[in-house]
Image 1 (cartoon, each protein chain N blue to C red):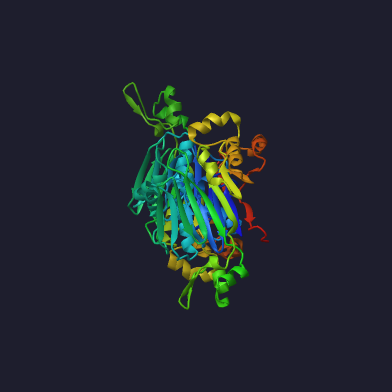
Image 2: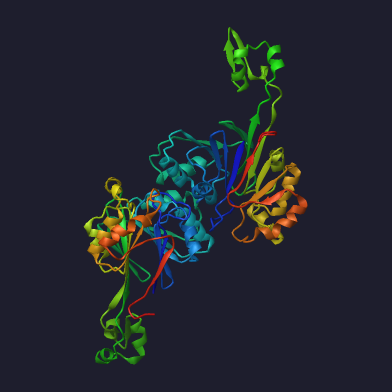
Length: 304
Length: 304
C-alpha cells in the first residue's frame, strides 16, 4: 500500500487555503517528499502525517516556491528527534541552495546527504522506492519524478520444490532475501513466480509539456502534473514562462495512457480552477483537479 | 491612526491555524513588519493587508522561526511590483543570514539595505515611525522593538502671530515643514503648541523577563510580549531556554504600567493557552491572549 497526499496546489506563492505544491508518500514506514515550499510542514501536520519518517526529499528545481520550506521542515524534523540521515536529491545547484538555507537550521541532529542530478534520467533506490528522475523543460534545470514500488511474484510451491529449496528457507526467500545454506546459494526467484504489477506515481511540475514526459509517466497509476493556467488565453504565457495549461497536461495524460491525472501548481491568478476543467476532460476523461491534501491509498492488485 | 495586526502567535514552528509570531503595523501608507517566519506572508494575505508597502522589516533575532519566511515574502513583494528599497534591521549576523536566504530570491526588483544593531539601545527613523530597538536576553543576540508615532502640537494662532509668521506659510509649517521666506527661517514649533501624546507599541519575544524591558515598554499603548509557557511547572524550562512564562510577562506589564498586554509566541506544547491566563490576570488585569490576526486600530487621543 502506498499512501499519496498532495500537500498543496499553489504555484509561485502560498495563499490562504492553497499551500505550495508538494507531494508526500508513505510506504512501509518510510516517507518521501517531493518539493518543500513555505508551509509544506504545516500541510503535513494538517494531514496528520509525521515529518519524522521522511527519508528522502526530491527537489524538482531550485525556485523559491519549491524549496523555501526546507529549513523550517528540517528544524521541525530535528525537534521531532529524528537522528537517521536524510537524503536530498535535486538538480545541479541543490547543494549550494540547501547549504545556504541551512544558515537558519544549524546543529541538526541528523546528517544530510545531498545528491545532484545531471543526466537526462537517473534512478535512485530508497527504502523500497525506486525513483526515476527525468529532466523536464523549465527556465532552470528541473526534474520530474516517478516513484515505483515493485511487487514480487507469488510464492510458488512447485517451483520451490523443483529448485530443491529446503523448506526452512522458504519464508525468508519469499521476503526477497538471498541465502547461503550448506554450500549452496538460494535466491528469491527460486521460490517466486513472475513479478506482479507494482505501483507507480509520476509527478512533474514547472515544465513545458514535452512528449518525453508522457513516456516517463507510462504505466503510472496516478500522474500528478502542473496545471498552471486553465484559461485558453494563457497558452502563450504558459509557453513564455515554461509552464503548461490544463489542456496541455490532459494531452500528456492521454499520450501516457494513465488511468488518472491530478492537476496542481495553479497560478495565483487562477482563482477558480473548476471553471476550466471541462475543456481538458474532453481530451482526457481521467483528469481531476488537485486540491490541498487530496489523498489516495494505492493498493497492489487484489490487495485490500 | 496606527493599525496593528499580530500576524501569528506560534513559537518554534508553524502549526495549522497558529502561524509563527510576527507583527505588522500600518501608518500613513507605510507598513512595518517585525519578524518574518515561515507563513508570515500567508497571514498577511489572510488579513487582507498588502505586502507591497512594507518599508522596514525588524528582525528580533536570527532563529529560523523568526526569519524563515523572509525569502518567500521578498519574492512576493517583487511579484507585487515593489521597486522602492526595503530596509531590514536586526542584530549582528542579520546580513549574513539574509544574504544566505536570498539564494532562492535572486533578481528582486528592489534594493535591500540591511542595518545591524550593536548597541544596547538604538533608534531608527522610518516614514514617521520612530523605532527604539533594545537588547533583550536570549540564547543569541536578540532585540525588542518599540515603535512610536509622534504627534505634533495643535496649531496655535496666537503663537503664530506672536512669532510674526506670515499667514501664507501657516499650513505648511503646521505639517512640520521648515521654510525660508524673505531671508528668515520658519520652523513648525513657531506655530504649534506643545507636542501631544503620540502612540507607542512595544514588542518583545524570545527573552528572559529582564527589568529593562519594562523600562522600554513604559508609556506604550500596547505591549506585545512572548508567553512561551503558561503552565507553572514550565518555569524552569523557561529559564533554561531563555523564554518567559505568562506570569513573568504579566509582571513586566505591571512594572511598565501599560494599559494592555497581548501574549504571543506560544510553545507548540501549549495547546490551550486559555487555561493559564487567569493566573497572570491576577498580576496584571490588562493581559490578553494574542491570537492569529488579532488586530487593533490605535488612535491619537480625541481622534475618531
